[in-house]
Length: 603
Image (cartoon, rainbow, N blue to C red; front, side, top):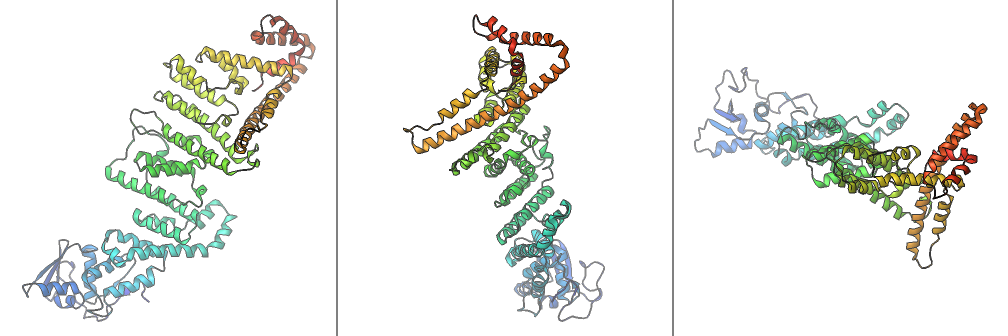
């Protein structure tokens, strides 16, 4: 066994006296007969101990035309003058310590100098190989340290196979630790998050010192050998935080910083981003934090990474879009003259999300998936609310084109919005920030608002909104009048519901596939209408409670209360049929309670 202790030569010569500077003379009392220059630094040495162990120096002296040659020069020596000094100490039989910090340099130097067993037993190649096999590859930490030193020893380190052995050793030791700490991990499940993090990620910081190409090989080997995906994800996060210093800052837009400082740094970070994305495990994608995915996407956009890299990040985000926060979606645009936010990226993410929902629905052949609580339906509703909030955030941008704004509105299906208050608010903000829109453009934008899906407060606001086209205000008032009549007549939308149910009967002339698609469409419309009715019922119950409280407070002034209520209803009935306004007004006096309740209903 070879340890980290002192290293002794097999045939040790009498210990010579060294000068303070090894680069000047090897002995203080014996003159050297050959000078070897390594990277501009001269070493005054003796031929005999060198040719006894180094095949390269022996050949150089033998091939020299002058048998009394006194100077040799070694080019591109691995490890530089310091490593050459250690190799010369070995030739002179001096003791020195082999460690994980110098074993790779010594092994490459021995290969360069051809210090094989053909010239002397237990030569430097043999001694370093023993240390690598018996000490380094048995330890994950030492393997990482040796692998990191190989960065400056290429390509000769690859020739002798040090990186490949270290990569395999790191992956194998990580798998062993994973098995050994299995019970500890189970214990951590019931402990604090901090303790659990320590149990899972103890080797993460060690891998962060590796260069990206070596890190790629290590993570790939770990995945091949079965290291847990969550451990790999933890390592990716730590490596990104250590290597991409600006990834946290990329989550907040800074107009002054649109590009990294230098081209070299930009290219290095671009390679790191692309490599980390390619290493993300596919087995357990949900373990990757969404904030990290958005941070990587911002970096990929800023560094102009490959299209495949950006599309992969967008696809992963789309898989869990219903869990995304609004702040994450506010991706700044890096192109000059464009809108402040990257709307195109969000549009592509939405396309991926809707494609996933469509695929999930096509895979479900039964009707169980079409229930009110189906995961796909709930996800679409959540994303609908998220996109409405996103539209309201980007609407004040004066550079946001109407085409892009409409594209984000119309991409979502109708059933994604139970209430249109969010989209109405976003459109109102956009109209306020873009006063130069033509009347046709305003009409084109407002046609996406369904007046029957506006709440009472939104209807009141829209009826008095000067920014909306006149036709829009008329539609709002008319729809409110129709709903008021429905409530007074007691229908409450039951006619619509029964109509939907009756229309859902499949036709004999339709194919089974068309029948199924028609039924699924009808189910979706029924769910949407039921959701509206639930919201409407909730507001009616709330208003009824307020009215009861008001009646109790004004029990002594019942006549005054009913009179004022009748006047309010009469004002609402301005859109009654011709000649029927007076009759409608007098007829509602006995229904004052119902009329007030309907005025605050939600359609």
